[in-house]
Image 1 (spheres, rainbow, N blue to C red):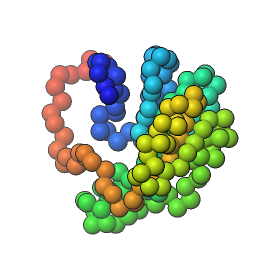
Image 2 (cartoon, rainbow, N blue to C red; image 1 turned 90 degrees about the vertical axis):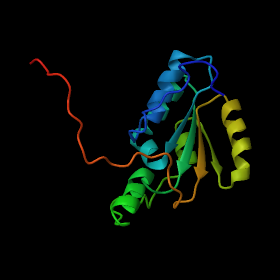
Image 3 (cartoon, rainbow, N blue to C red; image 1 turned 135 degrees about the horizontal axis):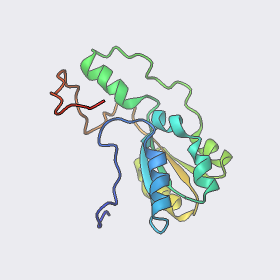
Image 4 (cartoon, helix red, strand yellow; image 1 turned 180 degrees about the vertical axis):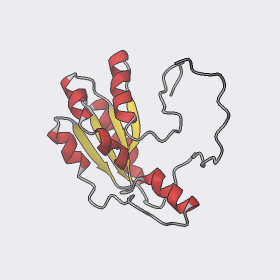
Amino acid sequence: DIKRPRQFLSSGSFGTMGFGLPAAIGAKAARPDCKVATVVGDGGLQMVIQELATSVAEDLPVVIVLLNNGWLGMVKQWQKLFWDKRYSETLLEDDPDFVQIAKAYKAEGITVERAGEVQDALKFAFDCGKTCIVDIHVDPEEDILPMLPPDPSIPPIEGRCAY
């Protein structure tokens, strides 16, 4: 439940891979009294996974809800919808064991393989008192919504820069 203003951080559908974990750590630093969670994909998390060390070292526990589909999901979706399924460099064939990585950083981790396990996994993650990855294995063919399609036009730029 988001009941107060300024309780939700987002990159605004810009597809900024790697935004979630650092933003969550910053939110926890700003509001250590609040529970903080981030929803990320497996490709995006791998871009900043070393920040688990920051979260643990600074005692800023966050919950990382990992939607793990084994792909760079948004990129794959664009290739599917706009480039006739010509997939290139989007399959993450050798995804690591994210639970083991979490534990290597002295964080926690739990794997979810069925929808019925999500609620218990989230309860564990929020109650454990540590940064925790909830590694949810999702259908690789599931699309990511909402999405913004590409726009071939560039809007006019208002104003001028004074250099």
